[in-house]
Image (cartoon, rainbow, N blue to C red; front, side, top):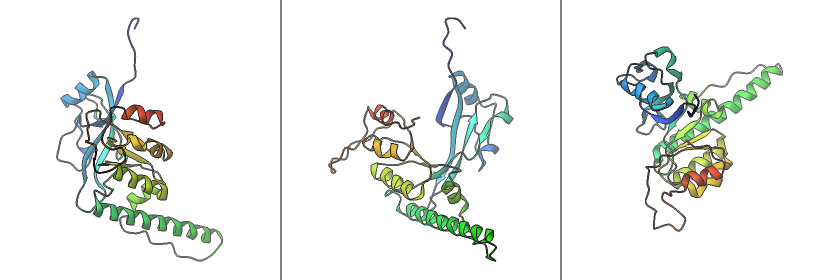
Length: 232
């Protein structure tokens, strides 16, 4: 390898390689023979995060996602994890989903509190009844126990601020998929240890009706990196 440059494989934070349609699970829709898999590896991309579908209606959750290794011709080695996060629609731009998400988090947090009390009473020798788990609580419990992170696609600073406020209340891990307007909030994002996924092609026109900095900036990645935020 003398005179050559050796580097690790790149990771695509957004990808669509190696899939065919017709399944609700990514694991059931993988195609290791797909041309896009070979193209990804040839360009140095060896791992990718894939999303299929997304939240619809008033349901804050939707779609599925997975982390894949792009291994041409080797189906068994492709799937690393599914799901790798929970896709959530939340923020002032999505009031119905936001209400449902807040309420689901509140109920799940209360359930965990009652579960801890139940376990403590059991250890103390008391005869107690286990608390009933709320319907549809499994996804919320995955977030509150930090087993999976939330992956949100904020439309503007208001969505980002609303998400950060929820992190303060419930302590889940947060990934902001799209940080076009994240640069004025770099310090606040860093305080919550949230991660940001950027696309340099994304542009947003400043809002001339507000006095704070808005819109996209060519310095976004540098500003977020200086704040210590993990970027992709």
